[in-house]
Image 1 (tube, rainbow, N blue to C red):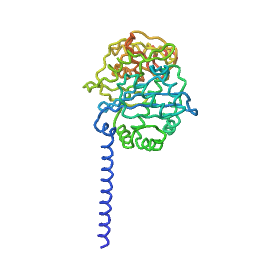
Image 2: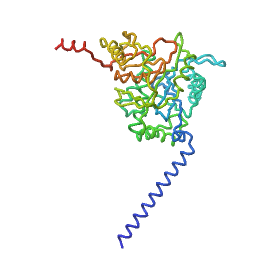
Image 3: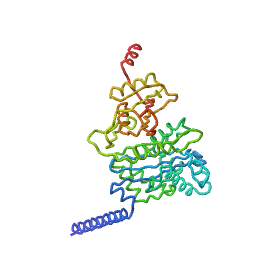
Length: 385
């Protein structure tokens, strides 16, 4: 008799738990159906968003970073455009000012208005062809707190005073790659983290969309395609309208299709493969290599290694700066080719710096992480022994 009562109790408990689970699933499904961003995630449509990270008096005053990001669900490609915030925006109604100056002048009174104006200027720089689904605006203090427990992210965020724009973009790329890896490896911690600091982040991203976005990254191998918006550098930084137009048409809004050829690249720093589903690479196009490692003959060795793989390396020389990481600057937007070069060199962070006027298609800055050995190295080692 007592055993029957226990069985009945367990049965009712199971029924109650099943009903609770069904109610949660139903509520979640209903919430997702009413959320446009969640719909796009489930329907595998491209998702576009804008990011602003700004400094405060406590951390990085007068520093502003701006990005336009398009996430292609079909190829798992995260296409990032970095905008130099020193770039001057021309407006008939206002005095020409840089994005950074305009933002901080307005932010003294209203940060949200400053962000809204900055988004409008950013969209204007790309001929208003970018329609953002959502936006994220956060200060560096909050951004740092969000990743305070990530020992790999912290030193990347703390880097500042870059010697040139290339090194600044290189740092930004590494932050994006680390963020993607963090979402892949520890989704629940990221959900908790974003929930904790959501009040400090200016965004129109709903809780359901945030959850779905993070969980999608958890189960997919995503690749970051990073580009620096074309600019003219003279007395001031101005938008390069001709190259911006070509970059958007031929590179950024290009539809990448699946191909039977193997299109994967090894990122030696992160230690994983990128499955990009890109079109086959084209080895043609002149390549320049610079030794930015401080090691003897590194550019020469990289040149011959790429030549052996049928890449058209024209010349090599020494760089005036030392780079910790190897940088592959792609001037023509052939991302698949740059990925293949990175695979051959077993090093290389790729930045698309589109420039239709430049003679070279690619420039490689062989950094300190680039290690290539040839027969002359063996003779040197033997002599030392």
